[in-house]
Length: 269
Image (cartoon, rainbow, N blue to C red; front, side, top):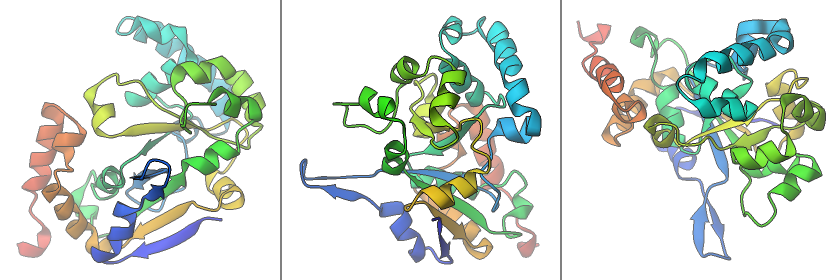
């Protein structure tokens, strides 16, 4: 079941930002959660589904085929694996079956509290989704779990996922609409590194992702951050050096940050 937690003050953010689990075996704290920040209380949907709707399954092979044909000019390795095609495509805005997540709650807060149109910041609430990687792993078919034996990880690198599912057809058949793999992207540029990025691979046949998480998981949380504190959160993140300047390394991130930093709110005019 999805638990909903409403956050209406900066102090109420602290459990989200600091949650970790003590591991006695290593005498250290670790987090098993992934976070996804969204500017509104939208459904969890892949960009492939939003773009292609009911024809997603039919159009996905053509999208990947044509992307690979042209992307190989920039990255010849893209043709070696459908998983590399999906990751590279998702990174550059291609409609794919991947969902973006971050291991950092602060990065998720950045995406939740940064509107394309800053006039909308106080117009509506925003959302942080929290996913437990252990739950996702426990629902996988046995051969996927065996492949990760002795790794002490719930996250699949591309090479290990390729061994158990060399193509999307076998992946969909294995999952039968009942599991999502967490995959770690290779560090193809600093943006992926700085955003602490991970993806979940959504199988064909899963249907509504919100319904799946509500019916199949116990530790999923939807944090609803009230519109009244979004600017306060945004300013706090800047002080912590979580801004476009860090999230999007380069001049595009710098200009986005400066534009927002010098944005003038209507309330002071």
